[in-house]
Length: 435
Image (cartoon, rainbow, N blue to C red; front, side, top):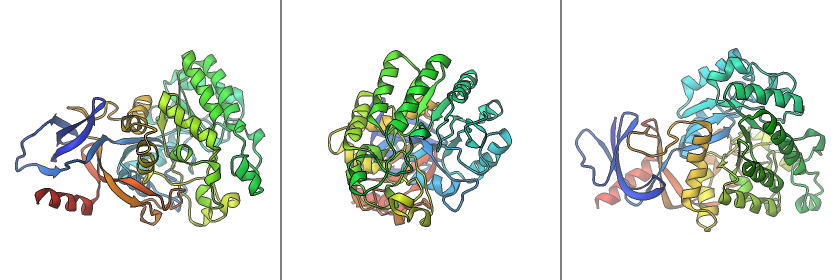
């Protein structure tokens, strides 16, 4: 396929410039101003619209195999494409758990047949994510992006230390869900003012940062590449800031809901239930500061769909997890960029370039001539209300339902394939351009 994208404001080489892009096959063959069109090209005039490198989410739950009533690889990757994502890293809390080459192959087969964007699975750190016996890391290493027991923290330091040593030998990264189970209160929200008002037990932030502190010591001993999942607490941000200053091979992610919400904005609804929980306003500000000073490397959605019934128990009885792929950019652009807290360039780095570089994902150099055609096109002036009933994802539970946001995805291209196209919006745009 030959496709010519004209007059778009394109993010390339660290800056926004009005350019044309010629796509041939799976590559961007030319980037320039005023590229001449010919009859063999599919032509789109995207005047005053923005072209970004395709987004990358290193923390999603696609639920298949094992839990296809919550989500499938097909619906999850369609949701990703709709939100501008061209590459995902899928977490291993599945059935069967990918703790061996044979179990991993069950997932890989579904990815090959059903995924509409690139999906790179994690292998489990331990057998069955039990935290006890290490998985067949060597047997899976060539086919996984890294190792994680996401959903559970590895409780025994000696198990995590051995996992780090083996991961380093395999040149793979450990992505850790950090949670000290001895500190869990069986609760659901930050143990602060909201919890006190509503008589709810809380998950204290120490349950996160204490295990991060333990793991950083193990990183010092093992030399392992280490990534902290879904950072939510100010203490964790500071620990990672100090570890980076020390020169440890450490990175971390946070999620849109931790950057834009705090516990006094909660309602007693399942769409606000996740682990780690939404914490205090002070924690939220510390995370934004971490984004701005580079301590927090990337933003991942932790897209974790559940059935409507599983999310119907309010904060106390709903399962942990929300959906996020389809509204992540819009809420971040509206809440951080439009308010002047974060630049658009920084946001694109956090949701595209930085995760790709850290995890060695496709198109890590972004939009460049001769590079892979992974890109997404947005109308940043489009204003709309988030309505989860319109999601491609089977999971409809998001704390951002009903939010008025800016930014509508018009088109997403992964490896030169159009994996999402907002037909109506593009048709209206092309018609206006011809008038």
